[in-house]
Amino acid sequence: MTMETSGLPSDGPVEGRPVQHDPRSRGSRALAPIRALRPKQWIKNLLVFVAPAAAGTLSHKDVRAHTLWAFIAFCFVSSAIYLFNDLRDLESDRAHPKKRHRPLAAGILSPTLAIIEMIIFGAGGLVLSLVIPGAHLFIVLIIYVAINVAYALKLKQEPVVELACVASGFVLRAIAGGVAADAKLSVWFMLVVSFGALFIVTGKRLAELPRDGVEGEQRAVLRRYTKSFLESVITLSLTAMIVAYCLWAFTDTGLAGHAVGREVYIQLSIVPIILGSLWALRLLDGGEGGTPENLAYHDRFLQMCAIAWVALIAIGVYA
Image (cartoon, rainbow, N blue to C red; front, side, top):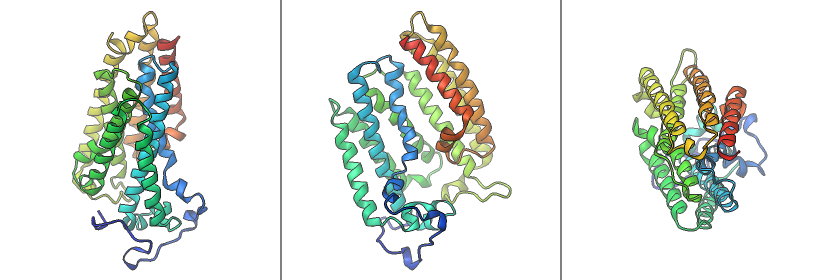
């Protein structure tokens, strides 16, 4: 942690240090508030659609509407959390080779405007969640905020615990989709998401470790991890995820129960899951997991696996 916990930063340079304006960070000031929301990371929020889609209810108009509201609410609240983190880590981000190009660290977005934006989006997301009958989505978002605030203030320094905190964001997104659509969440589905999230988060930490000729990420907690430990966690989580997926896909209480007569398509869905997982494992082992969202946007093989999986599930559950 690089800032005092007594408050958020002022508009001026931190501790008298001038802001380093790199040409690459001189984006339009008009777009700076949007860039600070990190819209590229909203791809994570697509997880809210998985539970209702797998339950076969996404074809219902009310379910689609509620799930869409849940997606928008999570985009708003998660962006508020990103702003909170950027405000907390402003000084260290300015000294970071990549993070210094973020709007706040680059000095093209003032902390005052960022605070206003954080409040609007955070409160807006919570209010939007109340559009859905019941307060279940609101509660999920409150838990998400509480975990992330605790992570930013203290838990990011604790090994293993910080992995669980970051992974919980993926799990809560999946739960949000279930509660928004009033869909029963299979225990196997929850295990798939949980271990899949742990796989992604641990791969990110592995990529952040210093390697030959490559400087590591500036995270204090990384000093308390070893490469062999993170590799073991990746192997364990990937194995558990695939086993849980097989049980979710092949049992009557899981996907197979929604695809009577079309179980073969659900069974075939294990193919893109395994191929995509092995491909991702190869990338993570090579230290390419530092920005998982970039892999989702740019890796064509992973995109093909995702499309194949969606197509097989759609045919099996909805055809």
